[in-house]
Image 1 (cartoon, rainbow, N blue to C red):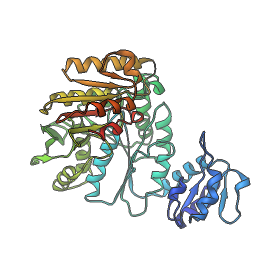
Image 2: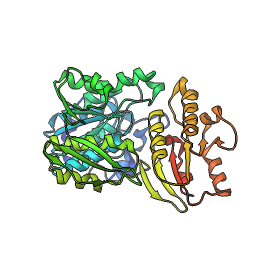
Image 3: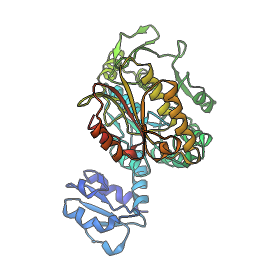
Image 4: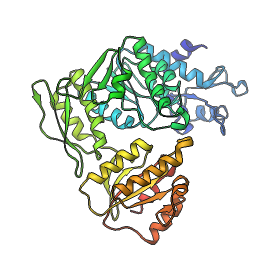
Length: 426
């Protein structure tokens, strides 16, 4: 692998892309392959669009002046990112977890960026392709980078940790997510712990919320930056949840004023606490921390409260698993919103426990006395009647015929359900 030679091209480039739609002047195009596409076939298109170089792995598409032939394009991208990370002089915070990764990442970025030039993973580019692309966006100007790592099977976080080689680590929580790929909850624990295993080997610290016994247990013997109690501060307090979270926090002799956030859901308190803890550790002034937390506005259907055409919506439809579903329902039930309705979509990647976990969600809505519409084939297996709908398309037709009005509606489901399509009517 001629990584160092490719790196010289990278240093002269304006960045990298794997998408011809983002092929702009001076970029390097990586011709990735998938089950239904072959990026090699689009190399010339990328070059014609302005890319300075195309990295390919099929010789028939070679152009002596503008292509760089490698054995495997994906491996070349990953090795280039790993080499670039080794040149990076700033500090990298590696982040993973079952729930709240992206919200935590954004809050941490906002807090650190108030004081330091900070890069953070864009969107959810957190897999074996996204992490390399994220690493290659770091520049000499950045003093910090927050790199999100996602996985749906064991050994994936281990691999991503090797690529990003973080200086600090943080796990949001360990819950029931991607149970099918991980092989159950114990598999999830082992998979997420791979970040800590990497850091322990390098004698590098991790941020640990003292109120989470699971994270305390798996970080035993490591250098830990503890927070969350009156002894290990900062300690963050929930003041109100209606309609949005407001918090206060203490650290040593400092007590914050009320900080009004733009986040919904009590479960986001942990995400906020992590951002505050990192801000304190890295020397961000309390006033800057408070301003950053207050100014952060969630988007992309993550803990997002907004006014629809006819109803108030709590959009949490970017992803769903049993842990996040329970948290969202319990938080919604506690709130003071009136005339509540839940529109809940299937949770994916649960394997053999899918029926059981969907049945538990139905039971929880009954226990919490929440009216709900359940959407998807998994929910349809565990219930019947008008409240159970097979597809999002059917839900849309139902809503067109009988549109809710002046209600508070929680919309939550796995990304593949595309419940935001139905929410557009609401």
